[in-house]
Image: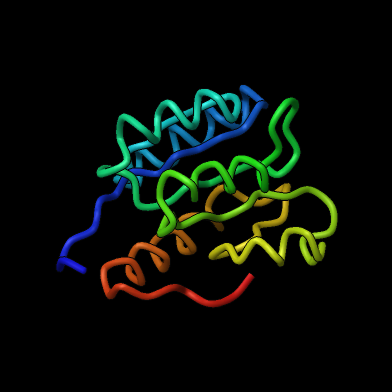
Length: 134
């Protein structure tokens, strides 16, 4: 892997407030956000900006296409896509754990708690590895 990795983060959440808040947070921390309200928008954005995105941050529960299903589609386009789920409820759900994502982040989470996780994941991407833990 090259010594630099893109900084962009694809954020997919059907809740407008969460999506906008995460967009502002990411932008203020130097991570360009690519914001999508559903799986179809996310796939289109990822198709256009794939080379600028290092991580997909996906809400688990969304109408029409949930996070795990969206991840399957993203992996068809790019088997190496890095992903974190944002999940309300049980983050140890077997279905989520089986997806082999970088992290499962429980909702609600303090926005400031997300930034260190993203920096750790970006650092791992620079090294060509994964950051362990959920």
